[in-house]
Image 1 (cartoon, rainbow, N blue to C red):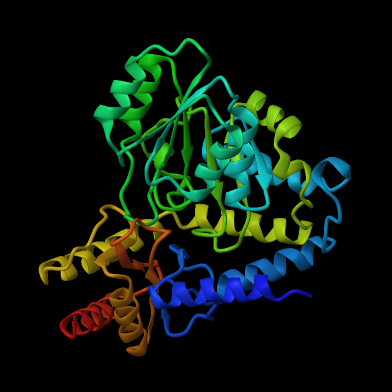
Image 2: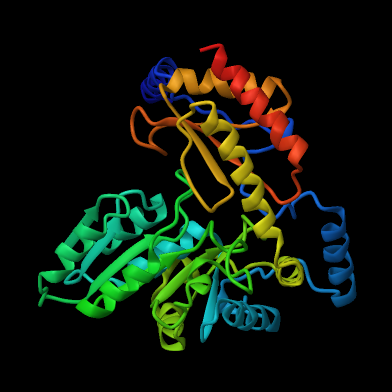
Length: 380
C-alpha cells in the first residue's frame, strides 16, 4: 500500500489542528448544555420506562431488514406517519432515516433543472447539498432573513420553471426565527412555493408543539416541512410532511428513501411514545424558552455578544477559533458540557459557544452556568 495519501491526510489534519479547527469525537461530560434535547426527554427515567413498557406490550420485531419499497414497510410505519401528519396539520408524512436525508430527498426529488430557488444564506448543510444535487438553473442565496432581497428577486418574473423559497424555521446556530408569515405572503403574491425545515422548531411552538409553522397558522400555506425527531423528541430520524400528492411523489422519486433500510419497528414504538409524551406536556417547550431568556439576559447584561430570541438556543459569538476552544474548555471544567462551534459550521471569525437550554434544567443551574461563562470570559 502506498502511504503518500495517508501522509497527505495527516498533514491536512495537522494544519486544521494548528488553525484551531480540528475536531474529535468526545463523549458528553458534565451537565448537558450542548445537545438539542430541548424538552429534556433524553435522560428522563419516566420516558425510558414508557418506551420499555410500550415495546414489551407490542412485542415488535427488532429490525425492518429491507428498504420501504422492498418489504421494509410495516403497519407501524404507516400508523406513525399518519400520526405525524396529524401532528403537523398536514395530509400525509413520510419517514426518512435522518433530517439530512429528508432534506436531500425532498429537494433533489422535487426541484428540477429549469427551476429557480431562493435559499437563506444560513440554511443547513442538508439544504445546501440537496440543492447541489438538484442543480436548479437559478440558485439565489439571499442574506440571512433579508425580506427586501427576497421580494426583489421574487418580483422578477421567472418563466423558465417553478420558484421555491426554502428556509429553516429556527436557525440552530443563531437561535433566531424566520418571519414565515411574511414569507408565505410573498410566496403567494409571486407564485412561489415555500418549503420549511422545522428541525429545531418542532416541540417548542404551537398548541400541539409541532413547530413554528403551526404557531403562525401556516400549515396550509407551506408546500412541505421537514422535521427531525433527534432533537425535541430525543431519538432519531425525520420526516417530510405536506399534501398527499407530494408525499406520494417522494415515494416514487426520493432516493434516500428508496435506497435506505427502513426504520426498525422497535424504534417506531419509541417514536410514537415520544410523540404522545410531547402532546401530553405541551408547556415543556415554553419552560425551556423561559429559562433561555434568563440566561440570555444574564450574559447580555455582562456585555457578551449573545444572539437569538424566543428560543432555547443561546449562542455567544466569540470570533476567534482558538479562543472559543479555550472558553469551552474552561466552562466544561466547571462541570458543564458545552462545545465550541467553528467554521465551516459557522462563517469565519464567527466561532461561538452554542448554549442549548433544556426543559429539565433549573433556575439555579442556569445561574451557575452563567457564572461559569462569565468567569471564562473574564480570563480572556
